Structure formats: C-alpha cells, structure tokens
Amino acid sequence: MKISPAKENILKRVRNALSQSVQLPFPNSEGNSSVFRTENESLELKFAEEFTRLQGKFVFCTGKGELLESLRALCEHKEWHNVFCQTPSLLKTIHQEDLPVLNQGNMHDADAAITDCEYLVARTGTVVLSSAQPSGRALPVYAPVHIMIAYTHQLVFDLKDAFSKLKDKYGNELPSAISFATGPSRTADIEKTLVVGIHGPKEVYVFLVDE
Image (cartoon, helix red, strand yellow):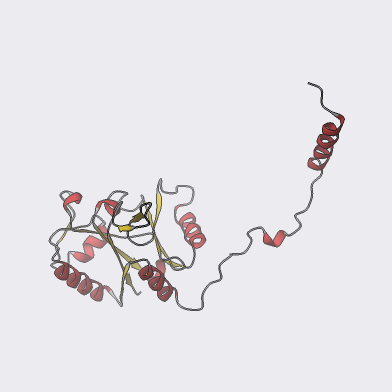
C-alpha cells in the first residue's frame, strides 16, 4: 500500500516528536496535591454530618461502657433477639454484658450484624471494609441491619488517605476485596424512585468510640 507524501510527512513529524523527550508544561498539576482541602472542623464531626446526610445512623461513644449501654438500648428498642457477630475482639467486649449477640447459627436469620471496619472517610461519610476482617465479605451484605464499631484512630479525611493506610497496614498482601459503604444500600428505577435496602442492609449504624 502506497502512502501519500502528505501522510508520510505527518508520520515523520510524529516519529521525530516521540524520539525527543519533552518536559511537562505544568508539572505541579499532575496530581501532586489533593483536589480537596482538609476541613478545619474535626474529622468526627465531618464524618457524622456526611454519614447522616446519606441516611446512616451515627452514635458517638466516649468509651467502652457507653458503647455497651448504647448497644443494649438499641437492641431493646428494636426488639432484636438475634444479633450476629463473628469478630473475636468485639465478642470479647460484648459478651461481658447480657446482650443477644451470637457467633453461631445462620447469619441469614439474624436481626442485625455487628462488625468492625478498616477506616472511616470523613469527607464522604464512607466506611472502608475488607475481606481481611473476621466478618468476611458476606456478613455486612446479608444482614438487614449493619452495625459497625469503629475507633477515632480509624478516621481519615479522604479516600487517598484510606488507601495509603491500607498499603501501610498490609504491604504487598492487600485483601482480595476492599469495599466502600456509603450509607444504606439504595437503588432507583427509571422513574427515579429511590428504594433503600434492595441490595444490602436497609439500616446502617456506626458507633464511633473515642479513645
């Protein structure tokens, strides 16, 4: 196939351009700084505002005692008799109280599930979960109500901060699944009707314990 002189001239100019390195015209604009600026307000307040804006339910606890009291009050108010948890550290704390929390049986019959989490992203009100947690992948999805217990040291401002901490924590052995839960499960059909709880929990709680 014969190439026209005009096309050959264009290809020659492209080859010459590729053979010579050119400095970036705006090197400081290539993702070296975050697009979002950290808010002056506390991460706890920012997360609470964004999380509740998305229909999440936020409870701040000043310590382990207040956490247990809040969990007890929630179970009694909701009349839950089967709350499922398979996180050893949480079970050790919860079993000190007479709460209806089990770690055996069918998770699909549970009224609610309690898990830990990896991090809380304040800017978007997002909870970071991973398959490396004792709760695994299924429990946070199948339970009709998902209760997550987190601590103030797990708060980060943005998603990039969460990714950075995950890399520091796991190194080259990142979990096989990392998920981001931003409020209860929701979807909308073509008529723009919002339905909550269609692909996951219809209620999501975060109990944040101050350390």
